[in-house]
Image (cartoon, rainbow over all chains, first blue to last red; front, top):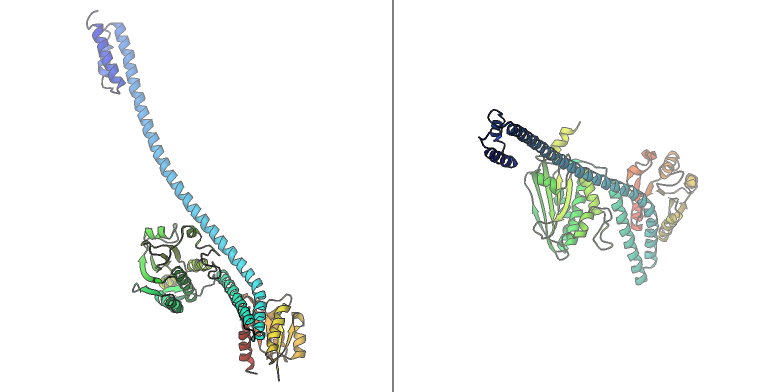
Length: 353
Length: 125
């Protein structure tokens, strides 16, 4: 047996083996041809047969491997999606937990406030009347009289703090009436007009036109605006501009993000009234940001702030199914409070009895 | 003739301060009661023109005292002014129906408000 020569055959096998090693499986026919023991030496034919089996098995294995890789890739993608969903659920849970903790905190402060108020008001009443008595007795002595009047002021200040606490603990009770939000804003502005003028603060009022009536507790919402106006004034010791704007708005996803709202509280596409109270003051410090709405947190000097204004404000908004957030203005000229009111007269009627 | 004012409050310093202030005006005869269970008995003898009544007192509270006064023919017409450390009417005890017509003053009350309130009920005496 000389032809085809063993050398030629080995050459062919080498070429096939090289192709195999590169993942090219198109040469099986050439090897199968060599398994013909009539044309080839039986030994060569047997070798070719073993070689062919190996090639076919390698191809099959590689095919299976590729399938497994595809499956794994798909499984990995599924896991990534599932993981993303879990992360989102976790974030939602953390947000809900934060809100619960906050709520719980507010409620305990409310309970505490009502108890403390009663216990403190009685001794305050004794001091108040004692001071009044002494003030009359000491009218002939200016220094003593003045001293006693300072004490009377201190009692009144303490009483204001207690009143704030009571307001806070009582703010559950609402008297909702259909109201024009622009009217409420203007009424509130009238109440602080004197302060604004004295502090050389200009008012820039931007009305948003035709805003449907909202269901509001007028007195409580006035309290909200007065709180915000007072905060703005305290931030503008050197004078400045107070801008109040109101407008009907269709809620967009960036609004939800801005107010830090999760799903369910408010949906995109719903209508809301957006009210903005902006100042040109010192802005909100980094360390204050997280604590703004905490009861008893204040950046104001002792005797000026009770630290209850914003926590009461937020609670009143919540009771109106509204939202409030405070931030530094995008144009970096000061701070702004932005509110969303959602309780429309129409909507309330639809849900009503 | 001086107008008679009865003060009912479980806190002695409170009634003492009120009494000193009112007596200092020279216009009133003032009696204070710190044990509300004796308020009715004292009032029958003292025959006040006006009563200041604390709301939250141990045992017999302000609402109970007011109800007892209203049931007594000699006291039913005497104006009662409630003094309370808790401002909201909703927090007055459920005895409240007879409290309804009376005036409330919130503690801490200033002397000028106290006097203005007396003037409203008794006129400038």
